Image (cartoon, rainbow, N blue to C red; front, side, top):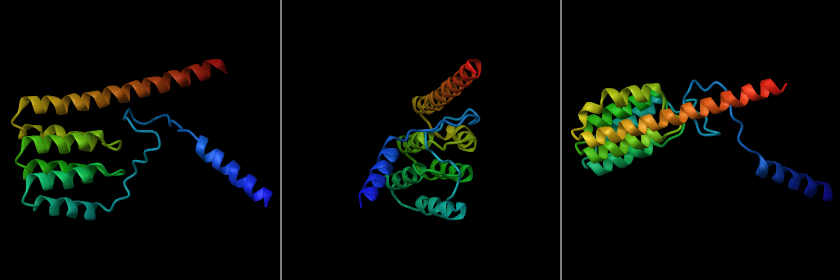
Length: 163
């Protein structure tokens, strides 16, 4: 009985104190520790869900559904692209469009396909200040990714020099 309690306590301590392992070679994209960005969602189902959201009447309702999808971990590049195109085409309000794009940009799995879709559809926003906020968010994300990549490179170089 004591061995079982000791084993459970030891497992609890190991799980509670386990940290984040930083992987080297993330292609310069910013990823949160532990974020697994391999697409596991069925693209056809996600795309059908995005298309269903486009048929809602209210811009607010559409934006809420799109933001929910944009927050999903492991959202594929194809789904990100379709989400951007659908949101920009079906939502009238610039504010709602901006909200959807900012949520997608904040997703740890936002990738180059999503970025390209955002940039190529940016002209559907009328407001230059909203366009600027989107571009600033993308730039901030890229700067963060560069800082993480540089920090990782410095750590690896320092470890190599110590050996």
